[in-house]
Image 1 (cartoon, one colour):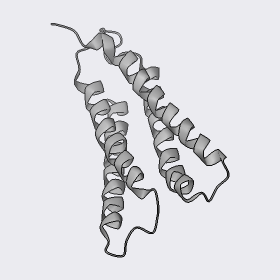
Image 2 (cartoon, one colour):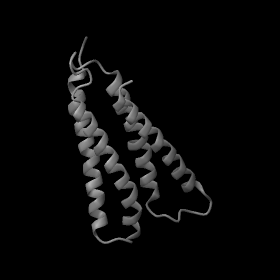
Image 3 (cartoon, one colour):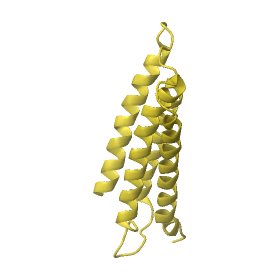
Length: 136
């Protein structure tokens, strides 16, 4: 298993645990004292767990790009990992803060930055994987 795949899968497992903890916290009968936690739970589960697991396995299992670059451009794969794992924690931090209005108006802009980073991660993954989707 290539190192980048291991990083994607390990990060996915960490986000799964975090999402499960957030889900348990949301289910507590005392109510939800942290406003904005449900979107964080949703993002941890979908982008943290599912998307990273899919990215990691696709990077590993898809047909080779070429004999010299079997998994495409390695730098683009790492860029995908870095962008996704920068945007997701920003989202997890600023979503509750923004919904509670405890920060300056810049907290809303931080959510825009987080979404942009996640979007760029998706584009980088597509750019790196597109040519690997081919017939035998």
